[in-house]
Length: 259
Image 1: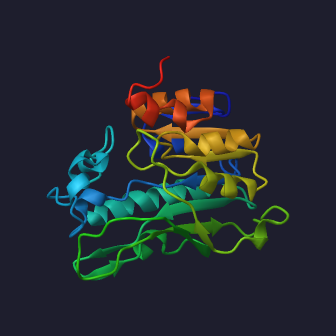
Image 2: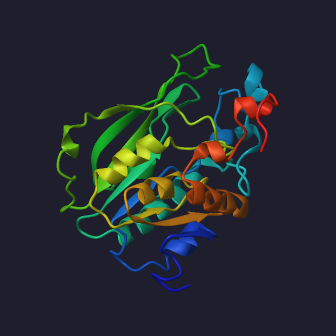
C-alpha cells in the first residue's frame, strides 16, 4: 500500500501495527482511538462466567469480530505499547494522540494502565463520564467513567476556544449501534474540533465513529480494523453519517414502519 492514496478516507482491513508501519513519520496530525480492553481476561466483572442478567447476551461476551479480547496481561501491555509507539512516530511535532482506555480492579488492586502509557508524554487525563452502568463486584463502587490520555508532542495546541472545556466530559454511551463498544459521535467530535489536524487516524476504527466525526468537520480520516465486517459497517455508516440507519428503530421492530 502507498501513502497517502491507499490510506486517506478509506477503511483498511488489516492488522493495525502492520498497516501503521506503512505510514510515514509525522504525516498524521491526530490519532483518536480506543483499543480492545482485554475484557475477557479481567477478573470479577461477570463477563467470564456470564453472570448478570442482560449481560448474558451482551456482544462483548463473545468478543469482537476477528478478536476474542483475551490475552495474557503482559502480552496485552506490550502489544498496546507497540501500538502507541507507532502512533507517536506518525504524528508531527504539533500532533497528539487521544487514547481512550478503562481502569479496572484486578484481583482487588486498581489497574490504571500505567504499564501501557509509562514513558509517553501524557499531557493531561480527561475523564469521560458515562451515564449508567452495571457492577458485579461488591468490593468497590460502580465504575462510571473511562479515561482519555492526551499524549502530545511539544508543539501541540488546541484550537481557539477549545481550552475552555473542562477535563470531565459527560456523554451517554452509544446504544443504537451493532458494534459491541462504540464511541458516542459527540465525544469524538469534541476531540476532532479541538485539533487543527487535517488527517485523523483511528487504528481500532470499529464501526467508524472517528471517521464520521472527522467527516463532519471536513477532515480526512484513516480507519484501520482487523475485522472485515466492521470495515464494511464503517463504510456504510460514513455514507449515511447516521447511526440510526444501521439498526432498526423501535417503531420498525414493532412493525409500525414500512420501508
